[in-house]
Image 1 (cartoon, one colour):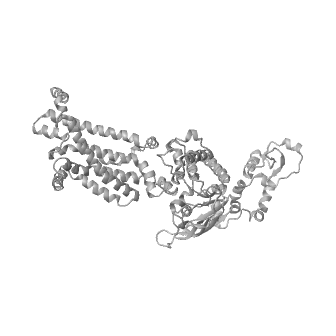
Image 2: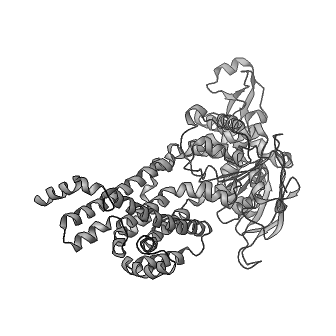
Image 3: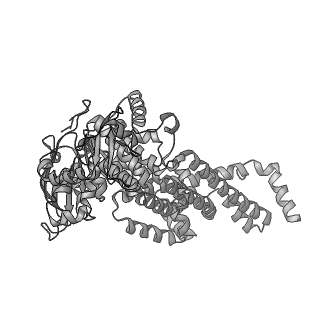
Length: 343
Length: 239
């Protein structure tokens, strides 16, 4: 059976795990790799699987493109059991990016990016046009980079090529296994931002594996926290994971500083600002904040300036009000009631 | 000194460049036996090496068998191949020599091909499978091109060994440059003996050079820049 989902309409697919388990050796052995995983990823969402090594997050990911077959349960893409789809054609319609990238060293950047379209038998001209389009999308200049070989690229450039290669046939689902773990922190942050931009632009559904809780909180629409033995501990939006960890394990995994971490998930524009004073006083302030700054950055700026409050301006330069430490504390008091059911 | 002048005079002597015992004919005979033996070894060992490397099964056993085969002296194989060639009605000379040379070519081709495929970065193979290549496409588009430098080293070692050893054929009345060696010994003609050795050495070096050129032509520039030439298991094995 051919899988023709989503091609051309640039929409993400729904990915569903239904009681999916994977046992190695004696079945069911004492320690499953993945234990009865059930979760659903909605179209266009980024689902991050996060946990320590050996928690089954990579195994779960590989069930989606059948590099691993579940011992029991099933995985569905748009309601179709992947086990019913030919593995080779399934993989051609699901993007796949791994940490070590796995670029073909004997092929140029352009040949690497065009791999899946070539396997699908696209005409030459369409492949070439697609290669240029993708290289632009991931921030590589086609004229400069097209004919380079992977050995001539930096780690960050290789990841970009890997990303472009995985997106070549406009897959409705992308699987990413620690794609940014091997690049340095500055490059990682840039690649994270660009992936989010591209993902929002295309509406692709992404399953993303990482062991880094900060990356998970930043990238995920929802975060699946997994623990040893392949058990899903919590599956919630990042804000809820931080505000209400479901178990002691999740609380420990996200860290004692989870209140501080949550500051990075909100911008000043989402906070209550105090509009109590006139504009004359604003001129005096030695500090000025932007509405699109995260609360974390704003707090840092306040602390650095030795102040308890600062004026906030919109992107058009209009004064919106004051951000105060008092309001910040109050926002935490209200937090549990207000953000619980938000997605 | 007089000896070298004698060798020079022998080499430029017009009589030695014509007829059935002339240098061009002997070189062609030598090359045709070598190419035939190399081609047979290639047809046997390359597919087997690719299969074992790709599936990862039974490789160790096959390599040990091939190495044991190589440990049998070529002279012994030659004397064994005589009755075989007679029995098949292939006669003296050419075919017994080819049959004796094939076992020399198999181990380097088999071992290097197997090792080349096995040592392809597992991430490359996983990426290839994850993008929807079937087994044959993984082999042809990922494993073989990536392992090409090591495979070519095996082909080169086999060819050079065969070219150097094909001289033995003269013992069983084949042609080739071995004639100069065998006849030189028999007639105590040291000049002829030396010329034979010199020509075999030159031919072996030209073979080596041809494979170096082939490597540049066939191996992707992406691999040549990556400097993967340092992994040459066969060279380590013979080293």
